[in-house]
Image: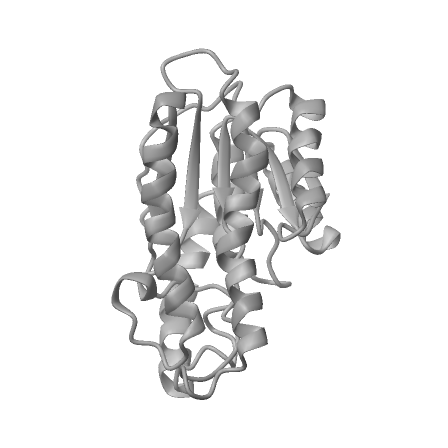
Length: 241
């Protein structure tokens, strides 16, 4: 099988926090993939997940491959206290924070504007949007002390649904669209702090959340995409062995 080519880069001496770094058993997910690739580039990675065992599974994968240092941290990014603790762990363990990957997100409640349960809708915004602001709130003050041309980099995970909509439920595209403009605001607000802020809006990728039964995708389409992307996932794993 032909290997995928990726640019050569080194993040040796850098420290990253990746939220949502776990994945369901047998899955990869955007957060886990980001953590592995950062570690492959010699970055030290703080792998954060609501479930400690899922974060630890990611750390185990990193260590098995002999990549950079990594530590698992259980944390709820909707909790201010947990966000502060996560940032403190990174400083205590590795001495600095250079990169934040805000990856936590949920599909949220079903329903249109007429049908949706508003309490669940507001909770979805808290998880998908407010949590990213809260992590940035606790990480940025630790980034600005870094020397060099750039003090830090923040990557916020959105979705093509945030640009185009087109999903059967109102919460997901609404929250993902908010992340796009939140990123623009963060980038403007913190440019003078030498912090870069970018947003990634992937389309359909093979993740446990996208291909779960509540994604709004027809079963036949889900299976066809799953089979296609599963090949990509296998290729990814192959080039790291």
